[in-house]
Image (cartoon, rainbow, N blue to C red; front, side):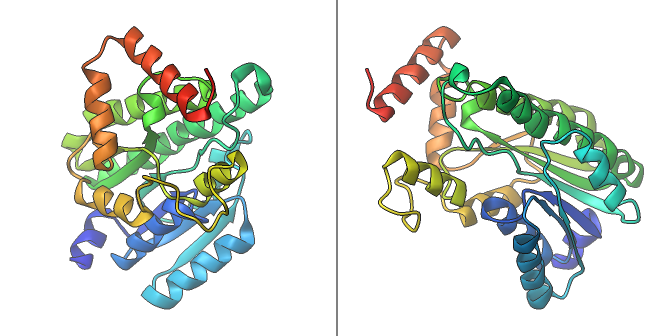
Length: 273
């Protein structure tokens, strides 16, 4: 099975956001299936640890690139660093929201950074890597989205908008590439048990420590399993029963009503009126 997977999607995969959480788990799963992996994130030491573990367990090649994907020119740096590689798989799962604050309480620079990292860079990387995938007639692209992109809500104005972009971008890319041998999915996550979520909930006082698993969070392993089970079932894959339920509910509602429901739900979760 790994030989078949590597033939279809290899020999190299690029994973953005690979230092921990879902990104690291995705890199591990790709290596287990026989792909060499390029790991992208900001923290070099953490990337080196992930890469060493992958090499030891699976015997594949690894390459690391410590880079802030929110800065101008980030995509060009990634492209330059992989110019000598045949990349058959792209995973873009960088882009969690570290703030969860009102739009006007944060700087416009923070919003622009969010758009750069969550919209501009995945678009640039997809444009670069998809072209040779189409020429070869094989490959895969996974763009991580969020239920926050279904409808606008408070405290995540730029984040929710960027994730709506990611979802529609993946759907549109799938419409152009799926009949050319390139599988594209937009992986829509709900509450997921990542270090970023644990840190956020601890800061908000809903967790006693960052060692706790947040209530109702989907384990990272489940996310990865659903992704691989649905690589050819694009364009959009909703992860977890709760997220599928939310998607069905919101799709059945008038958008104005859905926006009001989102605002009320977040206000209730935050303990405000």
